[in-house]
Amino acid sequence: MDKKKQAFNTKVIHAGEPDPRIEGAINVPIFQSSTFEFEGQTDYNDLKYIRLNNTPNHVALHKKLAILEGAEKALVTSSGMSAITTTLLTFLKNGDHLIANNTLYGGTADYIKNDLPDYGIEVDFIDAGDPSNWADYIKSNTKVIYVETITNPLMQIGALDKVVEFAKENNLISMIDNTLASPTLFCPIQHGFDISLHSATKYLNGHSDIVAGAIIGDDPYISMISSKLNHLGGSLDPHACFLLHRGIKTLSIRMEKQCESALIIAKFLEKHPKVSSVNYPGLSSSPSHRRAKQLLCGFGGMISFLLEGGIPAADDLISKLQIPISTASLGGVESLITRPVQTSHSLLSDEELQLAGIEKSLIRISVGIESVDDLIEDFEQALK
Ligand SMILES: *Cc1c(COP(=O)(O)O)cnc(C)c1O
Image (tube, rainbow, N blue to C red; front, side, top):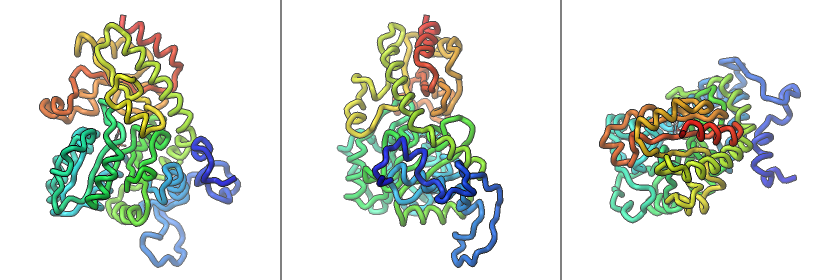
């Protein structure tokens, strides 16, 4: 069988595995060795060393991730933020300009707004859902456009196909944070993006037990980022590589279940009299529904919603729920619930929250793989 034609569910298990298997082992063993014997390499980046991200644990993961998103190459990093900052610093120099979506993961937004100007890099923010005025922001020094597949916490989907067109027309490098979609729902490189970024801490690993990142794309981009990463030092430890590798093997079944349960929960919440609004791209009421159907292979496992009764009602619900755990982060097998202004979005000022349309009482749930009947029953009792 042509391996390229294999289904995603087959690829998550088998793609990129060492051939032949190492000592016949079904899993890539953990190579807990910082350095490896010199083999006459002539390029520094080819010396086998954990910081250079090229041990057998890294190599197998890189192959698997590249195949899953249909790209030439991939790189794993010590965290999602390491993937994002290393990639931005590879392509942006003093005097350059960046265009980014106006709602981004809190850490990314904070880095772009407060750290990049220290390096002489300017930024302008656009609404990725509305291409009408993007051209107004183009300058002679604009180099990069940066967006996210599904925004957090409002679960909006931008005009991603238009972002790709706009980047090509204006000779920009297009970067997309694909964390919330994962390759199960969206493969950015196949859609024409230059670089796909992940917090592998979330859906890719799926078990809330490591912090990791991934960068996926074609050469020469990935080789350039790899050299930068070797200098900045954001390498992933081999043990974390092993856990990430193991986690990825269940990505498709986890994500299928999470999408299915999230739609059921979103519909339940939308009908509940104590719920005033629900953000989920799978609902026909969502302003992103049409785009989600057109661009993604599913609607994702993340929902946000507002209750009648504001912050006290939100905190009351979170404390009464027995299954979802109250915490930041997302994409694990366990359902996680939070008020983003207390966790993921606590760096944003009141003005920034208002601009982004994020209410302080907004609740966000990352749906896990528990029985959806149990989750619904839990919401029913907690909303009483
Ligand atoms: C969590 C997250 C990040 C940051 O990833 P870390 O692994 O925590 O460094 C970046 N982007 C998105 C969308 C995230 O959810």
